[in-house]
Amino acid sequence: MKSFIIRLISFVLGLSLISLGVSLTIKAELGTGAWDALNVGLSKTIGLTVGSWVFIVGIVLIILNAILLRTRPDVLAVITIFLAGVFIDSWLLLVFDQFNTSGLVQQIIIFVVGMVIIAFGISVYLQAKFPLIPIDKLMLAIQERLGVSMGVAKTIGELSALVVAFLFSGPIGLGTLIVTFTIGPLVQLFAPPVQKFQQRLQS
Image (cartoon, rainbow, N blue to C red; front, side, top):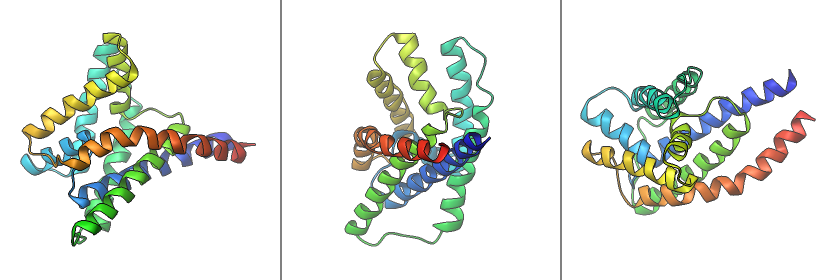
């Protein structure tokens, strides 16, 4: 029971941190990750909140992943994308609604802080071993179907999101490239100490 509670806290805390980081990179206006750019672009072009599009795109990906993997849709992942969408809207619409950056230096600081928080949040959320965000599972689905490495599969998924984000005028910029190539190494940096800390709590 103790182990489950710790995992549950890690899951919710991790998603909250990821959403905070994403919100900060959006507010920095230097470019966001490909999938975040897609959600922002859809929000600006069609309407609805960014969090709503996190949920809608997530549902589409759950179905796509099931088709690629030839399995039943991961219904429990709906909880994951619902929470992620709620957290992102809470940060953007309640906490940072009136927040605007003033100058390039502040933009860079906000962006870097956001990126680090995303990576740390991913490290915490992965330790929970709860249903993955559909974007993460898409990488595994592409890897299995195409027989490519995880890195190539991740790149294919990111580039696909980037193309659609561009079509919907998403916030693509230098920050997009930085997020794409930096988040992975940062997660690898944070993952070991986060795992050790969680194991210490469970013992």
